[in-house]
Length: 79
Image (tube, rainbow, N blue to C red; front, side, top):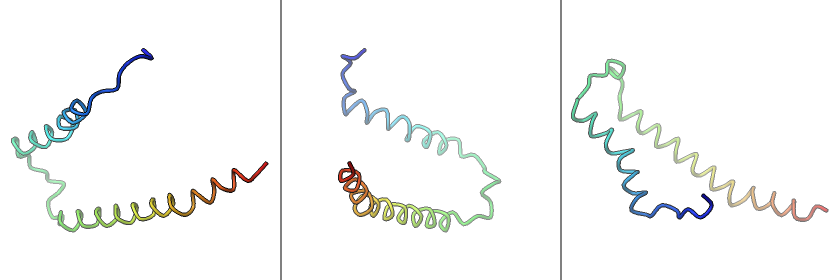
């Protein structure tokens, strides 16, 4: 088992397609009615999610650029 080769790039792409695209195509084909979503502004929800992801990305990059290097340097200097 230790000598297994990693999967090729094309195999990963095909798996990603099946995981993401096939369910979306199925939902588009069946056109189900979601009573849970009636009355909700999906555009506003999508904008809020994108905004939250932007803030999370900025915080993650700030952690990687500023806080983590200082913490790693402090660990190296300790005996």
